[in-house]
Image (cartoon, rainbow, N blue to C red; front, side):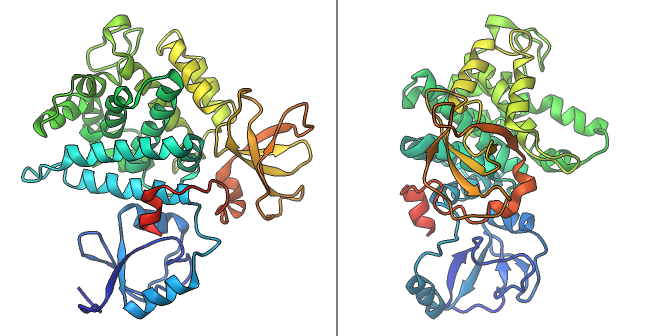
Length: 394
């Protein structure tokens, strides 16, 4: 390991440590200790920084530097605590996936279970914050962000359904592991614009069965977990795969995973297109209800995340821009915080405020977050939380 001594302290890379366009102050290492980037290297984009954070990248600095940082206090512009929780969960999921194919490591199940429980604990405090924070995360690699997004949506939906923590757990671990059968190609396929190769198509077609086999090899015996993995690409009209089963043959977990998987795939941006807005993704999913996907579960998901999902950027009739922070009983009248004036200039994040006809604060339309990144840099007070996962990372 270069440029480090026994006296140096290991620190995880965060957004406040590394800035796009600025030279690195330290060598950056992988979680396993391999040198990734040398001191002085200039990272060109926020996407690259997000990938480093998701991989658990770290650096080594002197104890004096650590002390000085602590004395400075928390940077008011560092991500809100909910975003730190998401970063931590992504790091933990990456660690679990990294040992998936290591036969001598028996901790895979425990790692996945811990992540699922941490999702539940964080949602105990503020489900809307967790939904909104993962909705806004556009820099994490898809093979990590997609399953975490699915799991949080499943947790939100099952909470809305009134299921208890133990009853929710099997679908959470299934959501986190539904694509482990194709991890080796998932990131490449997500970004490629050309048609799938025959080999890629075969891997995708086989991934429910392969994922099921991998879980069994790691000792999973929970029937709901295994069934959901095996069936999550089946459809109620029999048009899915691998076996074309339909109707009542499908587990409810698999039916819900089919919906959250579809939704997440639509709203996450790809290299060849921007993300589809939340409302447009819901419209596409609604068009499938009762045919290929379960209509009641579509309604459940909408009730859980709203017409304007937490994390959505909206423009008001006044021209001001806000971020949806919390749902209310009226799914089309969420609570928001203003983040810009009518000239689309950043303003200090305002207090939470209601929308709807009675307030005069009318939501005019939704906006694409990717096109308004300049408004999303200082979100430190949007969802203040005090979850242990975030405190550990601060």
